[in-house]
Length: 102
Image (cartoon, rainbow, N blue to C red; front, side, top):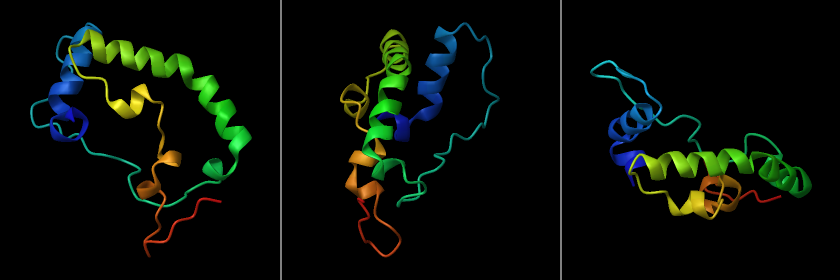
């Protein structure tokens, strides 16, 4: 979706919705951070902590959905389903291609 293919347009519309006049300099690069696969913490392996954190972040999920909707962007299915990297097996592969699900 727009997250990866046209992030400048997506973030520009979101900034406009927030009332920012000139949000990004021409040539600004929008890179994906923290994208490397594999576990970096034990969060995905700690089911009770993961559930508590997800509940705690629910207002943030709803606000992001609303902002995307209001800006005319499609809300990604993963956001609607509240699917995190902990539920995406391909995100949890280490460099050797092994799964570490806990």
